[in-house]
Image (cartoon, rainbow, N blue to C red; front, side, top):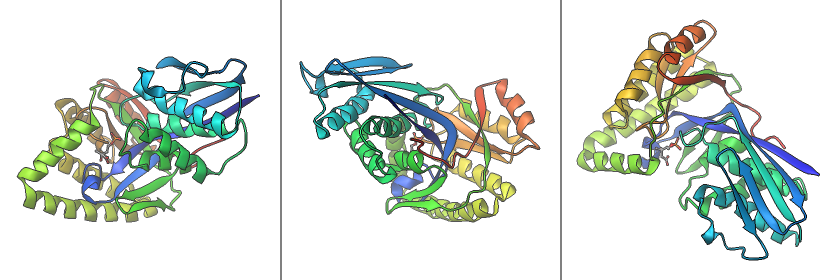
Length: 315
Ligand code: PMV
C-alpha cells in the first residue's frame, strides 16, 4: 500500500521583513507542489529518497537523529520515526519526495515537503485532519529551525491566501485568482543574515524605520482590499511601493533590481518575494501582458507563470 500526499509552495505578496516588527504580511500558495509517497518496508529502517539527496536511519542501530549529516532531511525522519512509535509499528517506512518547487529560493519548499510527508506517512495508518497534520508538520520543522513561525506550513496546508502577523494567522476569504511570474535571481541568500541586516538598519534609523512600518501597515491593508476587488492596477502599484521600501532597507541586489525593472516594463508591478539578497522576484500579470513579461524575463532569468493554489494539502 502506498500513501500519497502533495502540498504547495508559497510566495510572500507583501510585508516581508516588516512582519518581523509586527506588520502583517500576505502570503499565497502557488500551483507548484511537492509530492510525498510513503510505503512500509520489511527492514527496520526509515529511508527518504529525493532529488536533493537520500538518507537512511537504521532503527535497529539508533533512533537518534544527531548523527544524520543532512539537516534538511531530519524533519522527514522525525515524522516517520514518531509515527511508527505512536502506532507501535515494527516495519520500516520508505518516503519518496518529488518536487516542482525549486529548493532554497524562498518558495516554501521545505515546509511543503514537511506538510506532504506528514500527511503521507500518517496516511499509512489513518486520515488525520489538516489541523493535526499542520501541528505535527510545524513540530518537525522546529527540530531544525527552532523559531519557525508556521506561516509557510499554514499556507501550504490550507492553500489560498493568508494574512500573517505576530498575533496569528488569518485566512483571506477571497478566491479571486491572480497570475504571477516568478523569476529566480539564482543568487543564494540566507534569510537569517538578511533579517540581521534589517535589524541593523532599524537600530541605526529608529525613527525612519518606525515610519516605514506604519507606511507598510497601510500598504498591506490597502492590498487586502485590492485583493478582494481583484484590482490588479492598484495591487501592482502597491507592489512597486513595497519594492521601494525593500530597496530602502537594503535587501535588494543589482540582479534583483534588474529583474524588477525588466518585469515592471510590461506587468502591473513587481517586487522581491521573501528575504531578498537573492532568491526570487514576483510580478503581477494577466492575459494582456503575461507573454511580453515572460519574454522579457526569460532573456535574463529562469522564470515561470504561477497561479494561486486554493486546494492546499491534497491527501
Ligand atoms: O525567505 P522567506 O521567503 O521564507 O521569507 C522570509 C521572510 C522574512 O520576513 C524576511 C523573515 C520572517 O521570518 O518573516
